[in-house]
Image (cartoon, rainbow, N blue to C red; front, side):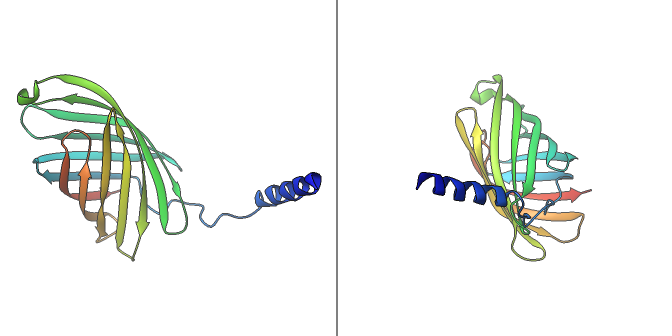
Length: 176
């Protein structure tokens, strides 16, 4: 009985290796320059991403509340299709953070790891969500993005980047 079950399991696993996958290319571009502004607390920043391989990209981000503070982050990301309408992606980032004078003015380095999903829900609208950790703090991004052209999109998000707390964010993304 055990040998028969083992033979069936082996046959299923072997045949699964030859099944074609539903998606074999990314559904979204990971080459972009994005400018964003947030409220509560007010902050602004810029993010750059450049795909270096089919399923890998580099990221650089800078943001500030313009109170002699900053958050500079850089690292690597992965991306790949889940199906013909959705991608899974994630990032491994190193942050160099300088707090405001009211928060002590300290400067420190922290690591972030996150994972998310991007989904087309119509021809021009994308839903996005991302969760992760920045040191001992949680990170959350969720929102919608309108793609007016292949090169330009705008978004509205709710985010908590682990530094400034919960924020509402608007952004403009230039894809290349």
